Length: 459
Image (cartoon, rainbow, N blue to C red):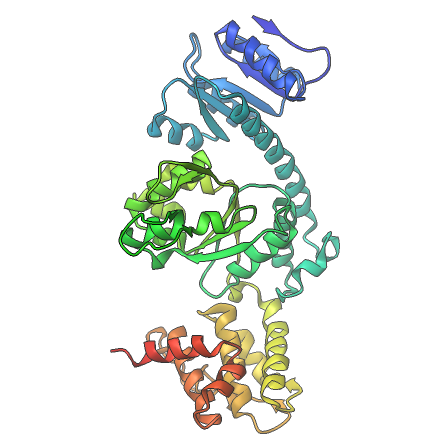
Protein backbone atom coordinates (compact mmCIF):
# COMPACT_ATOMS: atom_id res chain seq x y z
CA UNK A 1 0.00 0.00 0.00
CA UNK A 2 1.17 3.52 -0.76
CA UNK A 3 -0.88 6.69 -0.26
CA UNK A 4 0.70 10.14 -0.77
CA UNK A 5 -1.60 13.16 -0.17
CA UNK A 6 -1.80 15.76 -2.93
CA UNK A 7 -1.14 18.43 -0.31
CA UNK A 8 2.39 18.23 1.13
CA UNK A 9 2.33 16.46 4.51
CA UNK A 10 5.02 16.61 7.23
CA UNK A 11 4.27 13.05 8.41
CA UNK A 12 5.15 9.70 6.82
CA UNK A 13 3.80 6.49 8.41
CA UNK A 14 5.60 3.22 7.62
CA UNK A 15 4.08 -0.17 8.57
CA UNK A 16 3.51 -3.43 6.69
CA UNK A 17 -0.02 -3.68 8.18
CA UNK A 18 -2.40 -1.84 5.81
CA UNK A 19 -5.19 -1.87 8.38
CA UNK A 20 -2.98 -0.16 10.97
CA UNK A 21 -1.88 2.45 8.43
CA UNK A 22 -5.50 3.40 7.71
CA UNK A 23 -6.31 3.44 11.42
CA UNK A 24 -3.40 5.80 12.16
CA UNK A 25 -4.46 8.04 9.28
CA UNK A 26 -8.01 8.27 10.65
CA UNK A 27 -6.71 9.05 14.14
CA UNK A 28 -4.43 11.85 12.96
CA UNK A 29 -6.97 13.47 10.67
CA UNK A 30 -9.71 13.34 13.33
CA UNK A 31 -7.32 15.10 15.73
CA UNK A 32 -6.86 17.95 13.25
CA UNK A 33 -3.39 16.96 12.08
CA UNK A 34 -2.44 16.98 8.36
CA UNK A 35 -3.26 13.83 6.40
CA UNK A 36 -0.14 11.64 6.62
CA UNK A 37 1.58 9.83 3.77
CA UNK A 38 1.33 6.04 4.11
CA UNK A 39 3.65 3.32 2.85
CA UNK A 40 3.74 -0.41 3.63
CA UNK A 41 6.96 -1.30 1.79
CA UNK A 42 9.91 -0.09 3.88
CA UNK A 43 12.18 -0.24 0.81
CA UNK A 44 10.34 2.80 -0.61
CA UNK A 45 11.01 5.08 2.35
CA UNK A 46 14.40 6.57 1.44
CA UNK A 47 13.24 7.41 -2.10
CA UNK A 48 10.14 9.13 -0.70
CA UNK A 49 12.23 11.13 1.78
CA UNK A 50 14.50 12.31 -1.04
CA UNK A 51 11.57 13.46 -3.17
CA UNK A 52 9.38 15.10 -0.50
CA UNK A 53 10.06 17.24 2.56
CA UNK A 54 8.87 15.09 5.46
CA UNK A 55 9.77 16.22 8.97
CA UNK A 56 8.48 13.20 10.91
CA UNK A 57 8.46 9.44 10.25
CA UNK A 58 6.37 7.01 12.31
CA UNK A 59 8.19 3.74 11.82
CA UNK A 60 7.36 0.14 12.77
CA UNK A 61 10.34 -1.84 14.08
CA UNK A 62 9.44 -5.29 12.73
CA UNK A 63 8.86 -5.29 8.95
CA UNK A 64 9.80 -7.58 6.05
CA UNK A 65 12.60 -6.67 3.63
CA UNK A 66 14.02 -3.76 5.67
CA UNK A 67 13.57 -3.64 9.44
CA UNK A 68 12.73 -0.48 11.32
CA UNK A 69 16.04 -0.24 13.21
CA UNK A 70 18.09 -0.51 10.02
CA UNK A 71 15.84 2.01 8.29
CA UNK A 72 16.09 4.37 11.27
CA UNK A 73 19.88 4.40 10.96
CA UNK A 74 19.66 5.11 7.23
CA UNK A 75 17.24 7.98 7.81
CA UNK A 76 19.32 9.61 10.55
CA UNK A 77 22.50 9.26 8.48
CA UNK A 78 21.09 10.97 5.38
CA UNK A 79 18.43 13.18 7.02
CA UNK A 80 19.60 13.83 10.60
CA UNK A 81 17.00 16.55 11.19
CA UNK A 82 13.99 14.32 10.49
CA UNK A 83 12.32 13.17 13.72
CA UNK A 84 11.52 9.45 13.96
CA UNK A 85 9.03 7.77 16.31
CA UNK A 86 9.32 3.99 16.54
CA UNK A 87 6.44 1.54 16.98
CA UNK A 88 7.11 -1.80 18.67
CA UNK A 89 4.97 -4.76 19.69
CA UNK A 90 7.16 -5.49 22.73
CA UNK A 91 7.69 -3.08 25.61
CA UNK A 92 11.36 -3.90 26.13
CA UNK A 93 13.83 -1.49 27.70
CA UNK A 94 16.68 -2.81 25.53
CA UNK A 95 14.77 -2.15 22.31
CA UNK A 96 13.66 1.31 23.44
CA UNK A 97 17.17 2.35 24.47
CA UNK A 98 18.63 1.08 21.19
CA UNK A 99 16.04 3.02 19.18
CA UNK A 100 16.71 6.28 21.00
CA UNK A 101 20.46 5.66 20.81
CA UNK A 102 20.11 5.48 17.03
CA UNK A 103 18.34 8.85 17.06
CA UNK A 104 14.63 8.11 17.52
CA UNK A 105 12.61 10.81 19.25
CA UNK A 106 10.48 8.29 21.13
CA UNK A 107 8.87 4.87 20.88
CA UNK A 108 5.27 3.66 21.21
CA UNK A 109 4.01 0.18 22.10
CA UNK A 110 1.22 -1.63 20.26
CA UNK A 111 -1.73 -1.55 20.53
CA UNK A 112 -1.42 2.19 19.96
CA UNK A 113 -3.22 4.50 22.34
CA UNK A 114 -4.76 7.28 20.22
CA UNK A 115 -4.23 10.05 22.74
CA UNK A 116 -0.62 9.07 23.41
CA UNK A 117 0.02 8.79 19.65
CA UNK A 118 -1.22 12.33 19.02
CA UNK A 119 0.73 13.79 21.96
CA UNK A 120 3.95 12.06 20.90
CA UNK A 121 3.71 13.15 17.27
CA UNK A 122 2.83 16.72 18.30
CA UNK A 123 5.91 16.86 20.51
CA UNK A 124 8.12 15.39 17.79
CA UNK A 125 6.95 17.99 15.29
CA UNK A 126 7.39 20.68 17.93
CA UNK A 127 10.98 19.56 18.54
CA UNK A 128 11.73 19.67 14.81
CA UNK A 129 10.55 23.28 14.70
CA UNK A 130 12.42 24.09 17.91
CA UNK A 131 15.71 22.68 16.62
CA UNK A 132 15.33 24.54 13.33
CA UNK A 133 14.73 27.80 15.21
CA UNK A 134 17.65 27.13 17.54
CA UNK A 135 20.06 26.59 14.65
CA UNK A 136 19.22 30.09 13.43
CA UNK A 137 19.85 31.56 16.88
CA UNK A 138 23.24 29.89 17.20
CA UNK A 139 24.42 31.62 14.05
CA UNK A 140 23.64 35.06 15.48
CA UNK A 141 25.12 34.80 19.00
CA UNK A 142 23.91 38.26 19.99
CA UNK A 143 22.23 39.55 23.14
CA UNK A 144 20.45 42.17 21.04
CA UNK A 145 18.45 39.46 19.26
CA UNK A 146 16.82 38.16 22.46
CA UNK A 147 13.03 38.33 22.40
CA UNK A 148 12.68 38.82 26.16
CA UNK A 149 15.95 40.30 27.49
CA UNK A 150 14.30 41.37 30.75
CA UNK A 151 13.84 37.69 31.68
CA UNK A 152 17.63 37.38 32.02
CA UNK A 153 18.16 40.47 34.19
CA UNK A 154 19.27 38.42 37.20
CA UNK A 155 21.73 36.33 35.18
CA UNK A 156 24.60 38.78 34.82
CA UNK A 157 26.41 38.11 31.55
CA UNK A 158 27.92 39.92 28.56
CA UNK A 159 30.31 37.30 27.16
CA UNK A 160 28.98 36.24 23.74
CA UNK A 161 29.23 32.57 24.69
CA UNK A 162 26.32 33.19 27.05
CA UNK A 163 24.28 34.76 24.25
CA UNK A 164 24.09 31.30 22.70
CA UNK A 165 22.89 29.85 26.01
CA UNK A 166 20.24 32.54 26.40
CA UNK A 167 18.94 31.91 22.88
CA UNK A 168 18.75 28.20 23.67
CA UNK A 169 16.64 29.06 26.70
CA UNK A 170 14.28 31.27 24.69
CA UNK A 171 13.86 28.60 22.03
CA UNK A 172 13.11 25.71 24.39
CA UNK A 173 11.22 27.53 27.16
CA UNK A 174 7.83 27.68 25.34
CA UNK A 175 7.95 23.95 24.65
CA UNK A 176 7.03 21.40 27.28
CA UNK A 177 10.18 19.32 26.84
CA UNK A 178 12.15 18.05 29.78
CA UNK A 179 15.58 19.70 29.96
CA UNK A 180 18.97 18.71 31.32
CA UNK A 181 21.22 21.60 32.35
CA UNK A 182 24.84 20.65 32.86
CA UNK A 183 27.67 22.72 34.25
CA UNK A 184 30.17 22.90 37.07
CA UNK A 185 29.05 23.82 40.58
CA UNK A 186 28.40 27.52 40.95
CA UNK A 187 27.64 28.29 37.29
CA UNK A 188 23.98 29.20 37.84
CA UNK A 189 22.02 26.10 36.81
CA UNK A 190 19.08 26.74 39.15
CA UNK A 191 18.88 30.40 38.16
CA UNK A 192 18.76 29.41 34.48
CA UNK A 193 16.05 26.85 35.20
CA UNK A 194 13.95 29.55 36.88
CA UNK A 195 14.30 31.69 33.75
CA UNK A 196 13.12 28.76 31.60
CA UNK A 197 10.09 28.42 33.88
CA UNK A 198 9.35 32.17 33.75
CA UNK A 199 9.36 32.10 29.92
CA UNK A 200 7.25 28.94 29.65
CA UNK A 201 3.52 28.43 29.39
CA UNK A 202 3.73 27.17 32.99
CA UNK A 203 5.00 30.45 34.45
CA UNK A 204 1.83 30.94 36.49
CA UNK A 205 2.32 27.51 38.07
CA UNK A 206 4.75 26.57 40.85
CA UNK A 207 8.51 26.20 40.49
CA UNK A 208 9.73 23.56 42.91
CA UNK A 209 13.48 22.93 43.36
CA UNK A 210 14.55 19.56 44.84
CA UNK A 211 18.07 18.35 45.63
CA UNK A 212 18.15 14.71 44.55
CA UNK A 213 21.24 13.92 46.61
CA UNK A 214 19.16 14.29 49.77
CA UNK A 215 16.95 11.23 49.22
CA UNK A 216 17.44 7.59 50.05
CA UNK A 217 14.97 4.77 49.46
CA UNK A 218 13.14 5.25 52.76
CA UNK A 219 12.41 8.93 52.06
CA UNK A 220 11.87 8.88 48.30
CA UNK A 221 8.35 7.45 47.96
CA UNK A 222 6.82 9.64 50.64
CA UNK A 223 8.51 12.85 49.51
CA UNK A 224 7.89 12.43 45.79
CA UNK A 225 4.58 10.54 45.73
CA UNK A 226 3.00 11.65 49.00
CA UNK A 227 0.65 9.57 51.14
CA UNK A 228 -2.96 9.27 52.24
CA UNK A 229 -4.07 9.46 55.82
CA UNK A 230 -3.31 6.23 57.66
CA UNK A 231 -0.83 4.99 55.04
CA UNK A 232 1.60 4.20 57.86
CA UNK A 233 2.01 4.84 61.56
CA UNK A 234 2.22 8.58 62.05
CA UNK A 235 0.51 9.49 58.77
CA UNK A 236 -2.19 11.54 60.50
CA UNK A 237 -3.21 13.51 57.42
CA UNK A 238 -2.79 13.25 53.68
CA UNK A 239 0.31 14.73 52.09
CA UNK A 240 1.14 15.83 48.57
CA UNK A 241 4.47 14.69 47.19
CA UNK A 242 6.77 16.86 45.10
CA UNK A 243 5.13 15.80 41.84
CA UNK A 244 1.68 16.93 42.99
CA UNK A 245 3.06 20.06 44.65
CA UNK A 246 4.55 21.10 41.29
CA UNK A 247 1.34 20.28 39.37
CA UNK A 248 0.89 22.63 36.42
CA UNK A 249 4.41 23.99 36.91
CA UNK A 250 8.05 22.96 36.86
CA UNK A 251 9.93 20.46 39.01
CA UNK A 252 13.64 21.29 39.17
CA UNK A 253 15.79 18.28 40.07
CA UNK A 254 19.26 19.36 41.11
CA UNK A 255 22.10 16.81 41.12
CA UNK A 256 20.00 14.29 39.20
CA UNK A 257 22.96 11.92 38.79
CA UNK A 258 23.04 11.48 42.58
CA UNK A 259 19.68 9.68 42.56
CA UNK A 260 20.19 6.11 43.74
CA UNK A 261 20.00 3.48 41.00
CA UNK A 262 17.23 1.61 42.82
CA UNK A 263 15.01 4.72 42.67
CA UNK A 264 15.56 5.68 39.05
CA UNK A 265 13.04 3.11 37.78
CA UNK A 266 10.29 4.54 40.01
CA UNK A 267 11.06 8.01 38.76
CA UNK A 268 11.04 6.88 35.13
CA UNK A 269 7.61 5.31 35.50
CA UNK A 270 6.02 8.56 36.68
CA UNK A 271 7.59 10.56 33.86
CA UNK A 272 6.62 7.95 31.29
CA UNK A 273 3.05 7.27 32.44
CA UNK A 274 2.38 10.77 33.80
CA UNK A 275 0.62 9.32 36.82
CA UNK A 276 1.49 8.17 40.33
CA UNK A 277 0.04 6.43 43.36
CA UNK A 278 0.26 7.99 46.80
CA UNK A 279 1.44 5.65 49.54
CA UNK A 280 -1.51 3.77 50.98
CA UNK A 281 -3.79 3.90 47.93
CA UNK A 282 -4.33 2.22 44.56
CA UNK A 283 -5.94 5.32 43.07
CA UNK A 284 -3.87 6.75 40.20
CA UNK A 285 -3.35 10.51 40.11
CA UNK A 286 -2.57 12.31 36.86
CA UNK A 287 0.62 14.34 36.85
CA UNK A 288 1.22 17.42 34.73
CA UNK A 289 4.70 18.79 35.43
CA UNK A 290 7.68 19.82 33.39
CA UNK A 291 10.99 18.33 34.47
CA UNK A 292 14.22 20.33 34.43
CA UNK A 293 17.19 18.35 35.74
CA UNK A 294 20.67 19.62 36.52
CA UNK A 295 24.01 17.94 37.04
CA UNK A 296 27.61 19.00 37.60
CA UNK A 297 28.84 15.64 36.33
CA UNK A 298 29.25 14.09 32.89
CA UNK A 299 25.86 12.38 32.65
CA UNK A 300 26.81 10.58 29.43
CA UNK A 301 29.70 8.97 31.29
CA UNK A 302 27.36 8.02 34.14
CA UNK A 303 25.08 6.30 31.62
CA UNK A 304 28.02 4.53 29.95
CA UNK A 305 29.22 3.20 33.31
CA UNK A 306 25.74 2.00 34.26
CA UNK A 307 25.36 4.44 37.16
CA UNK A 308 22.43 6.19 35.51
CA UNK A 309 19.66 4.44 33.59
CA UNK A 310 19.88 5.02 29.85
CA UNK A 311 16.09 5.00 29.40
CA UNK A 312 15.66 7.64 32.13
CA UNK A 313 18.42 9.74 30.58
CA UNK A 314 16.75 9.66 27.17
CA UNK A 315 13.40 10.64 28.71
CA UNK A 316 14.96 13.62 30.47
CA UNK A 317 17.34 14.69 27.73
CA UNK A 318 14.79 16.10 25.26
CA UNK A 319 16.81 19.32 25.38
CA UNK A 320 20.26 19.96 26.76
CA UNK A 321 21.89 23.20 27.88
CA UNK A 322 25.50 23.38 28.98
CA UNK A 323 26.58 26.40 31.00
CA UNK A 324 30.30 27.06 30.44
CA UNK A 325 32.51 27.58 33.51
CA UNK A 326 33.45 31.13 34.46
CA UNK A 327 37.05 30.67 33.29
CA UNK A 328 35.67 30.26 29.75
CA UNK A 329 33.49 33.37 30.11
CA UNK A 330 36.18 35.95 30.85
CA UNK A 331 33.98 38.66 29.41
CA UNK A 332 31.64 38.14 32.39
CA UNK A 333 34.18 38.21 35.23
CA UNK A 334 34.52 41.96 35.79
CA UNK A 335 30.83 42.63 35.12
CA UNK A 336 29.93 40.05 37.76
CA UNK A 337 32.57 41.38 40.17
CA UNK A 338 31.15 44.92 39.92
CA UNK A 339 27.64 43.55 40.33
CA UNK A 340 28.60 41.73 43.53
CA UNK A 341 30.60 44.72 44.79
CA UNK A 342 27.59 47.01 44.45
CA UNK A 343 25.27 44.49 46.14
CA UNK A 344 27.51 43.62 49.10
CA UNK A 345 28.77 47.17 49.70
CA UNK A 346 25.16 48.38 49.88
CA UNK A 347 24.22 45.51 52.16
CA UNK A 348 26.75 46.44 54.86
CA UNK A 349 26.75 50.20 54.22
CA UNK A 350 30.27 50.55 52.77
CA UNK A 351 31.07 53.32 50.28
CA UNK A 352 33.17 51.28 47.84
CA UNK A 353 32.60 52.41 44.29
CA UNK A 354 35.10 50.62 42.05
CA UNK A 355 37.55 47.75 41.56
CA UNK A 356 41.21 48.65 41.14
CA UNK A 357 42.86 47.79 37.79
CA UNK A 358 45.38 45.45 39.42
CA UNK A 359 42.61 43.54 41.23
CA UNK A 360 40.70 43.38 37.95
CA UNK A 361 43.75 41.87 36.21
CA UNK A 362 44.12 39.37 39.07
CA UNK A 363 40.49 38.28 38.78
CA UNK A 364 40.81 37.80 35.02
CA UNK A 365 43.79 35.48 35.52
CA UNK A 366 42.23 33.42 38.33
CA UNK A 367 40.64 30.08 37.23
CA UNK A 368 37.63 30.20 39.62
CA UNK A 369 37.19 26.50 40.40
CA UNK A 370 34.02 27.47 42.28
CA UNK A 371 32.76 29.63 39.38
CA UNK A 372 30.29 32.48 39.95
CA UNK A 373 29.52 31.41 43.51
CA UNK A 374 33.22 31.57 44.39
CA UNK A 375 33.58 34.99 42.77
CA UNK A 376 30.72 36.32 44.90
CA UNK A 377 32.29 34.90 48.07
CA UNK A 378 35.62 36.52 47.18
CA UNK A 379 34.06 39.94 46.54
CA UNK A 380 31.83 39.71 49.63
CA UNK A 381 34.84 38.93 51.82
CA UNK A 382 36.93 41.66 50.19
CA UNK A 383 34.23 44.26 50.85
CA UNK A 384 34.43 43.49 54.57
CA UNK A 385 38.21 44.06 54.61
CA UNK A 386 38.44 47.10 52.33
CA UNK A 387 38.80 50.44 54.12
CA UNK A 388 38.95 52.71 51.08
CA UNK A 389 36.60 53.57 48.24
CA UNK A 390 38.30 51.31 45.71
CA UNK A 391 38.47 47.56 46.16
CA UNK A 392 42.15 46.68 45.96
CA UNK A 393 44.40 43.63 45.76
CA UNK A 394 45.13 43.55 49.48
CA UNK A 395 41.46 42.87 50.24
CA UNK A 396 41.62 39.44 48.53
CA UNK A 397 45.01 38.36 49.91
CA UNK A 398 43.52 35.43 51.83
CA UNK A 399 41.39 34.02 49.01
CA UNK A 400 43.25 34.19 45.70
CA UNK A 401 46.95 34.20 44.76
CA UNK A 402 48.35 37.72 44.30
CA UNK A 403 50.60 38.68 41.36
CA UNK A 404 54.27 38.26 42.21
CA UNK A 405 53.54 35.89 45.07
CA UNK A 406 54.61 32.29 44.86
CA UNK A 407 51.80 30.41 43.15
CA UNK A 408 50.46 27.53 45.24
CA UNK A 409 49.80 24.12 43.86
CA UNK A 410 46.19 23.30 43.01
CA UNK A 411 46.14 21.03 46.04
CA UNK A 412 46.66 24.08 48.29
CA UNK A 413 43.89 26.22 46.81
CA UNK A 414 40.96 26.62 49.22
CA UNK A 415 37.84 24.66 48.45
CA UNK A 416 34.52 26.42 47.93
CA UNK A 417 33.37 25.04 51.30
CA UNK A 418 36.46 26.52 52.98
CA UNK A 419 35.82 29.89 51.34
CA UNK A 420 32.22 29.87 52.53
CA UNK A 421 33.26 28.93 56.07
CA UNK A 422 35.90 31.65 56.17
CA UNK A 423 33.46 34.24 54.87
CA UNK A 424 30.75 33.31 57.39
CA UNK A 425 33.16 33.61 60.31
CA UNK A 426 34.52 36.88 58.94
CA UNK A 427 31.01 38.36 58.83
CA UNK A 428 30.26 37.09 62.35
CA UNK A 429 33.44 38.77 63.57
CA UNK A 430 32.43 42.05 61.92
CA UNK A 431 28.97 41.85 63.50
CA UNK A 432 30.39 40.84 66.89
CA UNK A 433 28.54 37.56 66.79
CA UNK A 434 25.12 39.03 65.94
CA UNK A 435 23.65 36.19 63.86
CA UNK A 436 20.57 38.12 62.74
CA UNK A 437 22.70 40.94 61.31
CA UNK A 438 25.21 38.46 59.88
CA UNK A 439 22.45 36.58 58.06
CA UNK A 440 21.23 39.85 56.55
CA UNK A 441 24.72 40.74 55.32
CA UNK A 442 25.20 37.24 53.90
CA UNK A 443 21.87 37.47 52.09
CA UNK A 444 20.46 34.31 53.66
CA UNK A 445 17.81 33.54 56.25
CA UNK A 446 18.68 33.22 59.93
CA UNK A 447 17.66 29.54 59.97
CA UNK A 448 19.87 28.87 56.96
CA UNK A 449 22.81 30.50 58.76
CA UNK A 450 22.10 28.44 61.88
CA UNK A 451 22.06 25.22 59.82
CA UNK A 452 25.36 26.14 58.19
CA UNK A 453 26.96 26.89 61.56
CA UNK A 454 25.69 23.61 62.99
CA UNK A 455 27.17 21.75 60.05
CA UNK A 456 30.49 23.54 60.46
CA UNK A 457 30.59 22.52 64.13
CA UNK A 458 30.09 18.85 63.28
CA UNK A 459 33.25 16.70 63.21
